[in-house]
Length: 302
Image 1: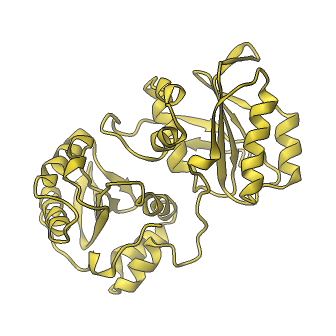
Image 2 (image 1 turned 90 degrees about the vertical axis):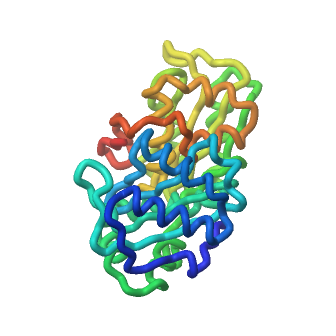
């Protein structure tokens, strides 16, 4: 569980431009003992590769993979700039969260941000509040917001099978153990074929029986032949809200960049989880792709 000390939140700060803000955040990370001084170079390089502006007034500057060795311990620094900073193509950032990631502890915070980005009212509260407690409670989900249930234990690799039902059963078992689905979901996904996303990736979901947002993955030892395509990896998604969008965004990037082989060749579940939940220095500015979820009947766009 990621824990952010309240002393790492800085209200009513002033910066004259984006690089000035990044330098301030980097210095705060250094002063807190989270990174070495060279981490600033990685933050600047990462920003030059692609903007770290997320939307709704929030930016998350962080280092590159090459500068991860400059991270001494996982931590963040949250800066509020009430006047706003021009960050990317006319977009203003009001909350700037500098991230130093040594492990995966910060993913809870990042998943929480995806929820904030879908609610303009919450984002506005972050930008205008004069209370550190308010920012702390929103970012750490002290205000009741469910987590997206997905971790390495939800991933089954090298399954020795020649039938999709074996993969589906494994995924369903994981979702049941997480209390994320009921029998209506199970019946629906078993009786309806999954959606083909391309490059051997299939997505199974249902408009029925979704209790929580959760995801399970099963990868056969050898690709299966299914509906005139290869089935190399099956994702089963219980879709209660939009908390899975960040993970689906990473999947979309892998599909667009034709780098799905990374998922299919990953040697363990932790590597698969990391590919779908953390950003790499190889990722480009966000591209756009959409498919229609059978849960919401609306296009999901990334």
